[in-house]
Structures are given as C-alpha cells and as structure tokens.
Length: 180
Image (tube, rainbow, N blue to C red; front, side, top):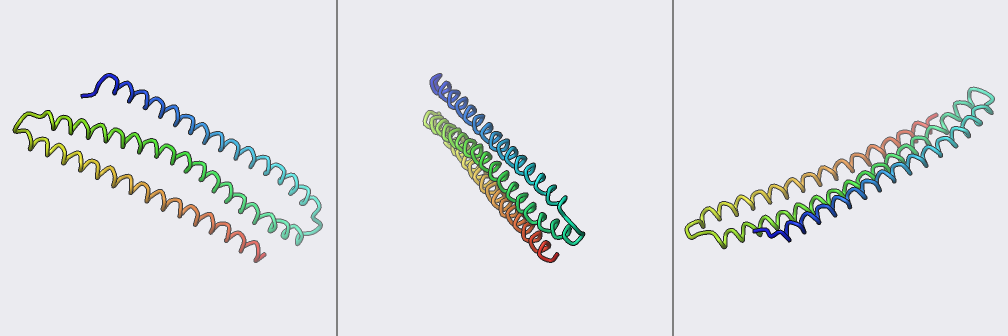
C-alpha cells in the first residue's frame, strides 16, 4: 500500500519534473529566437552587400558570374541554419525523452513493488493469479522497451537522412555553381 508520504513525494517529484521540462522548453525557444535573430541580421547585411554588388555590374556576363557566386554561399548558409535548428530541436526533445523514460522507469519500479507487496500478502491458493499478474507486468515492460528502442532507431534514421539531404543539397549547389 502507498502511504500519504509516498504519494506526496511522488507528486512533488512530478511537479519538479514538469518545472524542469518547462525550463528546458523555454531554453529551446530562446535558442531558436537567437538563431533566427542572428540569421536575420546576417541576411540583412548580405542583402545590402549584394544590392551594392548588383548595382556595380557592367554587363550580363558579370551579372551571371555574380549570381553564381552568390548561390553557393546561400545554399551553404541555409544548410547550416537547418542543421543548427535541427540540433536545437533534437537537444530539447532528448531532454523530454530522458524525463519521460525516467518517470516511466520510476512508475514501473513502484508498480512492481506494489505487485511484490501484494504477492507477499496474498491469501494462500492465489499463487497462480499472482504469477499471471507478474507475467503480464513483465510482458508490458518488454513491450515498452521494444517501443523505446524502435523510437530511438527511427530517430537515428531520421537524423541520418536529414544530414544526407543537407549534404547532398550543398554538394549539388557547389557543382551547379562550378559549371557556370
């Protein structure tokens, strides 16, 4: 049986976890705002420089060369921005995942403890029911672990795909600007 102190301690831990996750969420938002502000400042400065360069162009061939020279850095900066944004998102998500896994593990331990306590205090002849309950809990735990592994694998695959697409886009832009 759970005591009042155990329930209060559990509630306190849940509130502390929620406050910690809220702080992490705000940190993620702050990082994204900082990233967007620096990217906006850089884009504004580059637009000004590019406009000046465009105004100094004397012929069509020089204009094509200028456009080609501007295309590659833009693609690289876009890829870098996307990577940075992805890192912020995955960092924040991993904090949430750790907290959820920790809470799930704690809840699992508490539930297992309750099952063990109930098994010790069960009346004679209920051993089969206790064994079925323990088996069901073990099966649920195995299923949870399988889901967690699948989510981690899917996350790893998504990250690898994102990096491959970003690298491919940068390489394609480089080769296209060299051909001009």
